[in-house]
Length: 345
Image (cartoon, rainbow, N blue to C red; front, side):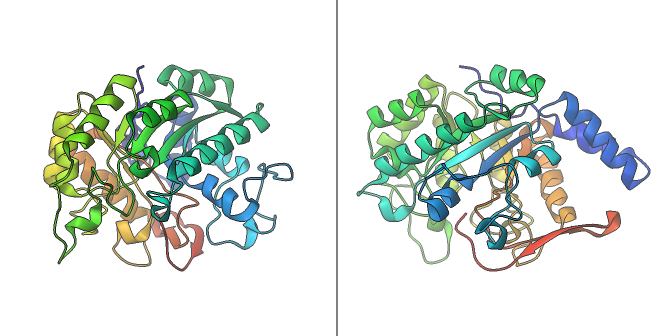
């Protein structure tokens, strides 16, 4: 299977926008490009919010517009519905089948299956607006049809239960990337907290079984997602993988020294292996604080472009997985919204 995440030519979009003289011209330039080229968002945590708020029951769920619907309208975690996706001209969305670290060695496989089931039912409930796709060709076809191409990414390597058989079944159910860790180590891969002061690495990134996970994902055609992993895990995974890897929702460490971000030497290696970093919008990964602007986000995109190259940068906003969000673009007068608190992303 050929899966191309970087279908959107982000550099072309940014260049045309910046060359336009006025804000209205810049927005018009972006819209013209996005009518022709699919914009893909690498990570959205809506499925976990549906589990939290509705216990995965979709009978009464109205996904068209949640801005005036309880409990979504009052939740700092809610940013996504079909109306806003259409207004933002998002052509393809990776929905996260998130599995919390607390489920590791317990019911993580069951939770992953339940979240994949939820995503599939959500898409099937809105056939006029959404379609489940598993290939790059599927994204392009959905874009021409005017439907949101919906893809599945499993967040947390513990979701496979240390079983290649489970990994294969997740692929058969439609999962097209696996995030090797979340905020906890697995027995075979180390997460980003291993890079924090005072922490000691146990296995130096990936164990031999972890490498076999990566190689089996290559064989299947499932993308290796390195968001949340430690730097040694990044480097070993990129060396091991026979296919390009992704970071579904990470930013540049040089601009914000969060352990969740990608350092320059890893960006250079990523370019050599033809991978992609999909930049997150979460302030703690953008400004290392509680506030950030769209200019700050653009700076991360531009930094990845400068270090890795224009073909290796995308967008993985992380909506519905963050409850701290303040993004403004002062020069253009865009004032979107503000949410304060903490996050699980």
